[in-house]
Length: 619
Image 1 (tube, helix red, strand yellow):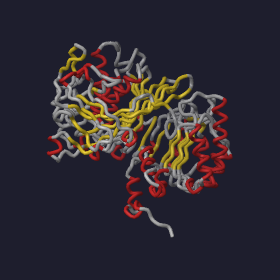
Image 2: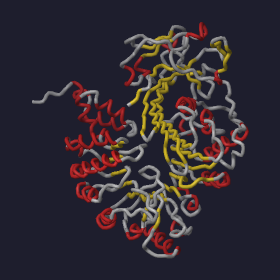
Image 3: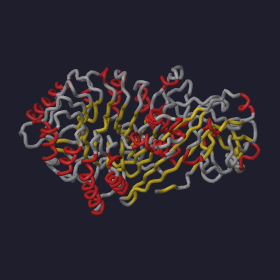
Image 4: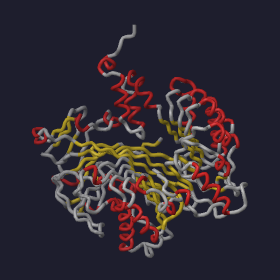
């Protein structure tokens, strides 16, 4: 008879799965760490671990599919499968052959995916037609399909007839359809011939997203194209909740939006600016304006529209700053850019969770990355409660100019993550107010989870840098006055990152160059508490963990760099310090490398690095 382990006796299966379900699906590493805690944990956490899978590498995708082929019981746990085998890679014969082999393995795997509900293929080429028949036969619950487009075609890409046949005649309960564009797959400028979609009738269709489209072969007049597509939209107006597509070319599409009148859309994307006056604004939760650039003249209308969207949670926009920056090198013009973007952000409701900015210009540069945190400083919000002040969780910025260096991008991310609320903020927000370094930390974006910087080339939409920073905060319970007085905080209250907690080493927190002005914080090997050598020189009321993944594309290859940083605020230090004989303000520098483990946030508060493994971990 099987004997239960102590963990199984103490923690019921339902409790373990409940804990796993509380971890964000984006944070797969934490779910994996939980699964590897014990064998019984792995058994119970596996349904959560394999529920949603996204792979951004050909090698990893091949290993995954082979693993699922060898373990059909695990394959039956997969509900969502997103494969990006050529992510940030330049097309090559080797990659194309690898994608074909991966598609062949996927065809064999299809019968073992009975729970699959979402499938996205984002590769260099569209898979062969027989893979769609295999998915339809082996995945009866499949409701959401995403795919990129194949090679460019002047008259529009004709997708496989087997795909259209499956969608139109064999998917009567289709709920979501995403083809190309900026939906489930990466950005693309390729055209898609969507004429077959007009024949479709899906009473339960809720999501429709596709990229640049044309409708060749169904008529020769502009009015006919417009009429047929609007009839298709009107036929699904009662079920559609999420609509996103780029504007058709001038020969196949007009600007009449009568079909969208009073539609209760939850999400509207791409060519959405002209539809805002037609739909019910009070229902809209997601608005994406990234199919074309918006000039400074458009921003006034956009700001007014944002004020009438009380439920908006996701907002993305492409802004062309050329007209604002007539002389980009002048600081007053740069300040005008910050003001324009900040005012647009202020027009969004406080419940906004996801903000994406795509910036372009024909000038020398758009904005200084070190000062981008100024955009997120809202006026008159300090009186609001903690969660009501700002609920932003995801902040993404695309820029079509050079970052300068990875160090500058990292510094920009730290400034955003550590910036604090400022009272009496005026339009000239470039100057930081002084903080009492002993005061409680009052973060400007207290719920922020992820910061993404992307360097892209417009109009080719070629990505050369993708820098991602995952943010996690741990608030310390300081109710134990005795421990606070002696400068001791239990290790379990700090809960350092598991990835670095097993490699504790004794190190000096502050550089020796600060001399007697800087008390030394030490961490003893295998100690059970953090110990300050002097009274509360570091006050970790909040510990901020930054998990970075920086991808740089060189010679068509993606080179990832991953590292983690753990920071806490430094207190009881004078505003000026002597460093190598020079007097420096906190506002003027960032010290990195070696033992100089200090980061300067935009708030004027000093932050010390509790731990870091930033030694160029490359995979």
